[in-house]
Length: 139
Ligand code: CDP
Ligand code: MG
Image (cartoon, rainbow, N blue to C red; front, side, top):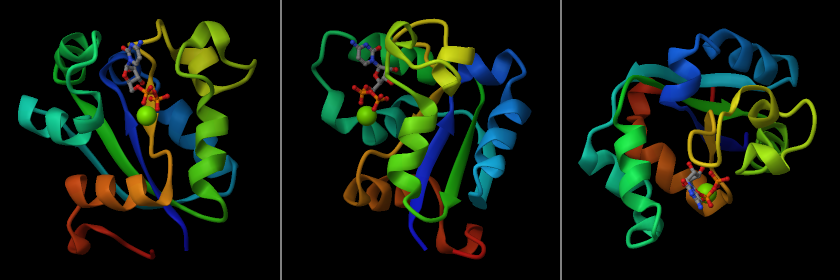
């Protein structure tokens, strides 16, 4: 089964949108293979966002991602990597299509509610950052 790593970011978590977002993914037919509530530290954020180190928005991104609890998820299903990115919508909610999670719940192009892996290579790398084999079910 194809798998992807999703993060429900601190903005969506603190506004009480966990249930809405999880329901959306389940309604689309995707399976929850792993889930946990946690708070990222700077080191974890740097590992996860390694390709963004040095970008102008990087420091603010780390500050935001470590500012409160998140939910990390592994979702599984057919074409889940591309489909979840479609369901999430464009990085900046101003450019996101109607009905996408970011259009519905994101407040800005940085506080944008959700993360999802962008390729099979990213999914593999990101899943290993957040979950051990023992925390994954049915994948
Ligand atoms: O998350 P996504 O793959 O859609 O976008 P990205 O280009 O890989 O950027 C990763 C994250 O960095 C975004 O989701 C934003 O939270 C943040 N970002 C930002 O704050 N300002 C930007 N100009 C670009 C990205
Ligand atoms: Mg990305």
